[in-house]
Image 1 (cartoon, rainbow, N blue to C red):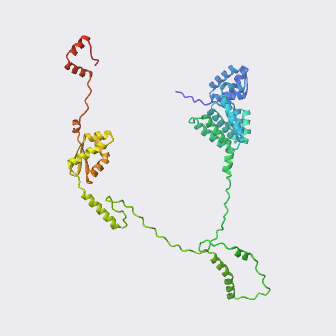
Image 2: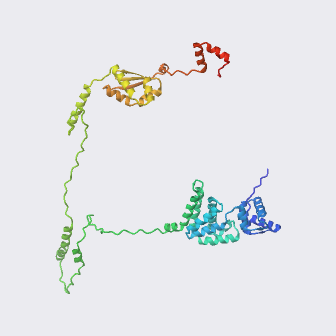
Image 3: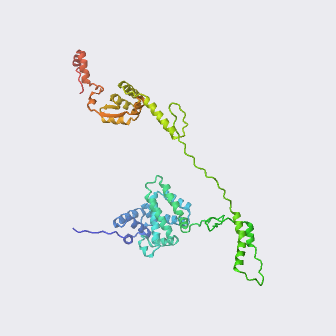
Length: 443
């Protein structure tokens, strides 16, 4: 088989072909109108011819740009130029009014955003001369693109393109679509201010230091000199005589010590006196002891008293006799069943078989579901241990499937036929009545 690869026809080629048709049919057509038809055809000449035929049939022999735009329901590019001019000067009211006019003409917000993004893309391409051929527009429209591209900085165009892309992506998920588009238009109005703040961030004022950072050789802050010392340092030295006597090293050392000693004494006087505060030892945490059950005073302060209290409680617990008889166990078992609030748990306990074997509570149930329900009833063993005075009690649950057959089940409801048979056994005349009336059961 033979394969034919069809390529998209360029806009310029479609425009040239439509111009030839206009000359043959004696139709006056604006070049911008033919460009709109070629762009709408999207590279297909057959679509371009059908659009051209439809527009000519409604507009007549004179084909203008306005007629094509209104017939094909295309948003005029004049709106995009006006909106871009308003965005460059941060004129938000004009942008909002233009968008209101677009919506009033019947265009959706996503159509406007996509067209505005295409407009920004053409302006960005005009920034490079070698990319001008990628703009599918006429000569006059291309000149307008170049003039507006010279006014728009590249940072503005890139940021605006990014905002248009985000607006188009999130447009379908927005509940209030008009407000969604307006918010992005407001952001575009402040692109210039945002770029200016990003490139030239405001300098934060350096806070003034109220106290000078003076450190002593030992690493501690030196005390500030008093006003009197500062005045003495600012006073000029007395003029020296013409012939000064030769001073020995010992004399110079004595003078140095004499000169520095007043300052040292003043500095020492200026240092605050250290007051020694006795360290308080943290008090030992007091243990909170519960009050003994026999009414003894709980003022226990030593370990021996604590041990005595524990021994006393153990003696009291040992003195209480454990009630491990079957009668006592059954009495407490029934008492616990009475206080259970859940109807399902109460039914399981009623159907279970409980007995006491030494210090082990043996419960026999009919299913694993009942076993899990009794295991989750943690209050049961606490209740039995406390009331039977037997903290050593343990729980043993066994599952006996045969016990389920012995459990009393509710009677099965009788069918109509079974009811009739019972009525017939009581009164045989019922059957004769049925035959005389020719009555039958549905089933």
